[in-house]
Image 1: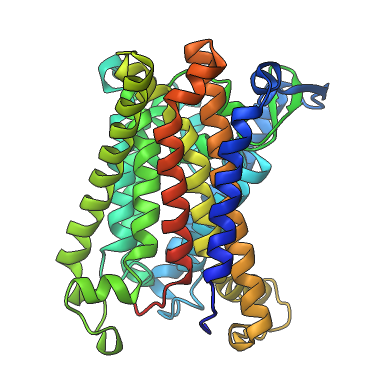
Image 2: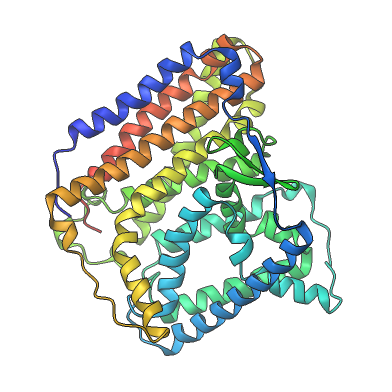
Length: 430
């Protein structure tokens, strides 16, 4: 991709976030309280029972599709750009499904390959062997997400079809084993990908609550929802830490820090240990910085409920993590999406789709691409600041105290905006 003079764009993005913080100071209290209040929409067309039946059917089709992709991963072309399995996992799911989840709502409910096999197990009379210990919370989901992040950023060949087939098949079996032991609660608290996708779905402006569809500002489902427990709150922070390192570990700057010549990069096998340490540090530093901003804010208002504020404000980090995902993978979506469409066309007997990357070498198109990426990051941070203010207002009950206690967190978000935009503009060598 061509490099562009991005200083003005970065400055403008940071200025937008700063302006949002300043506007919060002038925001009338009633408006602040109503920002994330949804509007009741029309009654849902499909009842819950019918929706459950149809979602099990689509889940079954998704499971069959996954089985086919696993077979193709082992016996088909070992070119990741033509084999269905890596295209389905890394392009269809990791890029497009994750993006759609936060914009359109809970698509995973319909596409999860786990719900239909679980329903089949229950249909033949199998029941959970154990009750879910309350102390477990979402800790298994957090561990699963860390393992998934390690596969994405540390594994030497995450797109190798045969290798990926063994990993995905093993994970599918382990997930069904978890469902066999604990029942559906495993998908709600133990299966990390489902847990993360469910949290991202709460960012969508349109959601079904009870028997009605409701619409509101993006993120209203998080801002007005219950406070997460420690494990879920930490998972929300880990999402931002892993997403940030996912962008950092590809930059020339990171490679230079770990002593690797970016122009002579030999592949992932050269940086396994360094990336493992970097991923762990990115998560630890992010959680520590967030914790310090919460403590500093509480010090400003004389409050000592650190645990309560730490957990309650964690959902406000999700818009930033989601925005980074959209921005970082937009170029991937534009290129790998063509391979994905070509694969679908090929297996449906359609025409070949020619894959092109020429737009990455046209300055006007690259500028537009960067503006779209920067816009996503800036909007994510603005939404996070508004959400954190609404949550702080609910905790403190006072507009002035809410502004004061979230000032350190808002400053942290401003600095993180600068960091995120710098990541997008940095040259990449991995």
